[in-house]
Amino acid sequence: MRVESVLVRDVRFPTSRQRDGSDSMNEGDYSATYVTLETDEGLAGHGLTFTNGRGNEICVAAVKALARHLEGRELDPFPTGMRSLVLDLTTDSQLRWLGPEKGVLQMATGALVNAAWDLQARRAGKPLWKLLVDLSPEELVGALDLSYVTDALTPAEAVSLLRDRAAGKEERERACREDGFPAYTTSTGWLGYPDEKVRRLCREAIAGGWTAFKMKVGTDLADNTRRAALMREEIGPGRLLMLDANQCWDVPEAIRQMEALSGFDPYWIEEPTSPDDVLGHAAIANAVAPVGVATGEVCPNRVVFKQLLQARALRFVQVDSCRMAGISEALVVILMAAKFGVPVCPHGGGVGLCEYVQHLSFFDAVALGGADGEAICEYVDHLHEHFLDPCVVRAARYRAPTAPGTSIAMKPGSLDTYEFPGGPAWRE
Image 1 (cartoon, one colour):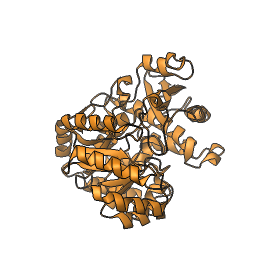
Image 2 (cartoon, rainbow, N blue to C red):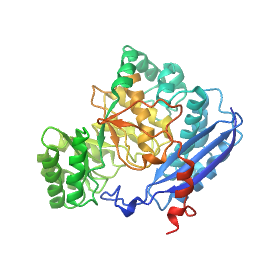
Image 3 (cartoon, rainbow, N blue to C red):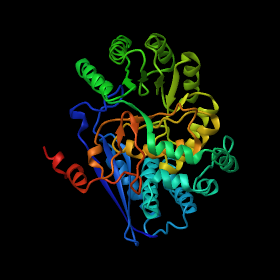
């Protein structure tokens, strides 16, 4: 299978108008650098990376700069061809200087890698999670780049881990198909929502079967306390409440805030400080226990995750399918988390991320058994109507995808409407 062309589009949804997605540091227009790989077999693979409006054009430019590594490329043999693709993208002798393996360049790499995985899954006639589950341990590990993390997980250890977890795999797959995978909702607690809307959304979510809720917190402790009290009042004592600071605190401030907010029985505090501060996360984790620390949605690569795991700096791994080198690097992180016994709770906030990360959660559940049943996947009820095969969540559980691919192909009409700046949605 040879890639004949790489197409990329700048797609933006005006979510800032309703303050959807608002938190302590971000309020923008959910956007996607959307990639299509066209092949000589007539198949097309789709991939994207999520951005937040302004700057999406920079990610588009990065995809165009990297496209030379895919145009005319043979994607076979599979699966080892996936590893060589990742290495060619991440070790480009000139573009690498702009990273290496971080920032816009890494996100653009993710969009291209994800489109290649979509192609492979479509050719196999399987949803991505099933394609991954059906690979032998040797095949799966052979598709991944474990450079820079072999002090935490060697390829041989990864193969042994997958072999050791193979017992009960068929039963776990059957359970996932029948029962789905547990989810929590972020849609009730955006920072920009007025109190009345938060109350209404909480009540609607409870009626829909939700048992785990996330709310955003900011720099003002009094406002955080008031809103946490409101959320806890609405959801009651028996449901999970997660807090998300979106990186807005210094380490001492994170500890101070959580000393006050711990009275509301939070399950975790997410992104309490700079995402690059591994030792800061470790200090916070030690100070706020038994409240867990969750982070990872903007971790740029497997190396930062390795350090967070080695330092025991997080209780929950929030892997993202777009921030790193796509699905390939996310799988490396999931394998490391399994070795360290840390549950993977993927980041699903953003256009298309729920569609992506459901596959990672089902793979983790079936191939690795999760981590003692603590794994849970984020769900945000935004923009799913724009996808041809959107994720399905019923009674607070993701249903296992059945269509071939990664579930990320968008409707042509949506692409035309929301392409920036030419689409009708941007002509107001």
